[in-house]
Image (cartoon, rainbow, N blue to C red; front, side):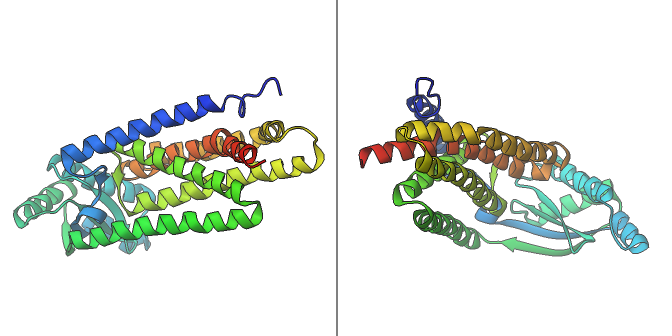
Length: 305
């Protein structure tokens, strides 16, 4: 095919991805030298303090109406976050607990700092009661790191087996390498942008892998269908198949990105890092299905013909 953009220009796409991956690795190495860790690790991994707070204003609404409205929850969460930020507390996560209380996770707070935070919260919100105060130890954080890596590796291995049975080994290898590509770029840009890495981050990575592999399978399915009917070279068939599924891929990713953008801008600061990871990963998941997985499949097939 004379106008082969996706397969014929594969070296350009491979070079672009390589540059992003290298930038990410450089960022991780730099962060390790400066902070001792390649990422901005949250308290799930490093240890910290977990508070359960009863806020009188929200409690009054709950007792009157049986629930706290989303607007009230968002207002209280924002006020708590503002207080902790003003007290120079790091790794802040504020969520709703048991539909009426507020869970606050942060870096380790000693008694003096905790007393000051509670005092400032009372000044800002009125009545505030600490119902529970827990310390998350670094040992638990290390165990969670190991489990997160294990979960990701197992997920990729199971996908390798699934795609091998559904298509063939070379298709599975191309798809898995595309997933590795997505993971490396997401990790690298997360390091570069100093996004917080916590248990939600791991969930985001797994979500990205699921999205990416689904998009890749759609293209591989079309390639397999066209192989049965077209007499062109495998590279041309792959090019044709990508173009046939391109509109679907673009519409799907744009729809998802619009929803994520809405969550990013209107979902509150506590969701910014999580949605940022998803925005990066979903975009490059679509990109890799078109520009990485399919060209890799063509290369593998050519090497084994």
